[in-house]
Image (cartoon, rainbow, N blue to C red):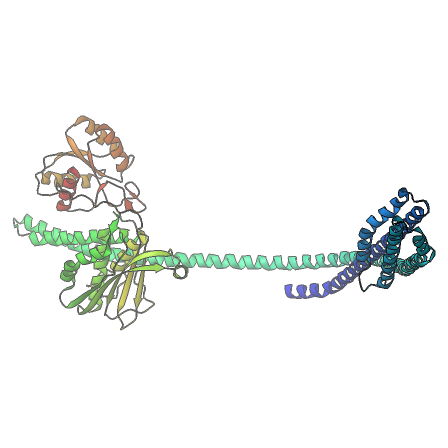
Amino acid sequence: MIVRLRRALRWQALPLLAGFAVVALIITARAILAEAQIADRDASREAIEAQQTLSSLLSLAQDAETGQRGYLLTGEKNYLLPYQHAVEALPALLKRVDEMFPVGSDRAQQVAGIKDALARKQAELAETIRLYDTGNTAKALDIVRGGRGKLDMDQIRANIDAIRRIDGANLAARAERMEQIEGWLRIGSFAALLGIFLLGIYTIRQSSRRFREVADAQDALSAKNAALLNEIYTREKAESQLRQVQKMEAVGQLTGGIAHDFNNMLAVITSAMNLAQRKLARGEHDVQSFVEAAADAAARAANLTARLLAFSRQQPLAPQIIDANRLVTGMSNLLRRTLGHAIEIETVLAGGLWKTHADPSQVENAIINLAVNARDAMDEEGKLTIETANCHLDEAYAAAHPEVKAGQYVMIAVTDTGAGMAADIKAFEPFFTTKPATKGTGLGLSQVFGFVKQSGGHVKIYSEPGEGTTIRIYLSRFTGPEEAAPPVKTGGRSDVPATETVLLVEDDARVRASTAAALLELGYTVIEAAGGDEALEKLGQNAAIALMLTDIVMPGMNGRQLAEQARKQSPSLKVVFMTGFTRNAVVHNGVLDHDVHFIAKPFTLEQLAAKLRDALA
């Protein structure tokens, strides 16, 4: 419909365009005729000016002759004044004549005759006056009576009359042509007005018809738009339902994986605790193996939670300026112990490597995770290469990877000689693994992915079946000033006797009881509080409190607010935060706040002892 309408409008526009072309032609012709008329007027004005100049030339010649005759007859010098004036004025006037009648014009011959006769006449006048002044009056009068001067004046007059006749004929021709031009201009103006009037009528009629056609097309388009909107709504609704189904499938896969792994760990813990209870009830005390099994399962459960937080980019990070070359070099012994001697390890470290800003412990964890995955892919025999390099991800790469910001990056690559992966494998999805059930949880790459994204970086997999795998981590280049290395803390030893008083703030009674027992086991004096208000009250009552160990997520006043109020009462009070989920109280944009002591739940007795000694130091 729209195509047909456009074609019809194009054909309808042809007469309009032709009409405008005719009007434009008439206006152009009128402009040309007007220019010709102006040229004729200028030529007429120049002819009149030329006639006036020639008349002035003849008048000067006559004045010179009159002054000469008066002087010869009377001898009075006053009679020479017109002659002298003419002699002075003639050169400028002759120059003007030359400008008006250049060589090659139709009046050049007459002008030459005028100039020759005038030159002879001036010579005769000058000669007679000279003879008279020297006393030879008779000879001077003989020259005058000879009639040569009269002939020269007659020639001047004759040439001027010839020029006047030529100019008169030209003026008459121009006048006739100007009258014709005036007639054509009148006809052209009338034709232009008539054309504009007819074009206006035609345009109005065509516009009315076009408006009707456009209105019909708009109605048809509105109907199609309504149908299209309805189709879009239906499709969006179907896509929304599909996304919801996919989301539920993803949540189901995630919760299923979590439930599977946690149930396995809880099964170990429950079984170990039940067996230990039965043995203790019978008076048997060989329960160490059960306790160790339960502790190991609990540690694996804590590690699983940490990996899930890393994947969801909600783990607290403590970034520092990192030299990746030094970090990789320092991990060589750890990697050797982890991978075993059957794996050949090679490092390719770039010279002049840039610095980056990231959590060094998480970078180490990422490299270890990638190395362990590579070891399993190589069936514990092959070559592992760790490479560092300076890289620039350009705008083209960023356009192909919308989550990437173009710029300079420090690249850490881990390459193995294992079996490789197909391109359609979603290796970063949580609980996805190609390993046997006893070889891993499928959270290693997910944890790496979450940490790198939380750090503002990029991770990319290059792999083909049978060709091995390369995983590259890109961390943003650090360009700020170098920070001073953190001081070595000498007071954080866990074997130092604990004598301080600790205020424990925890809203969960069971967690508070177990944490209090751990503090007592470490030798601390413990004062317990179930919330912020109670903690502030007990802090005011006990000046001996040296440290406050507080949960972050509590009803009412959270741990960060409590710490701020407590330090107003006791500026020297040390504070250690503990929680299973940091939210935004002490972590902002995924980074742990400066000078914050934090310990994540669950923690071991040794971890708690080290953290408290570190804070008190």
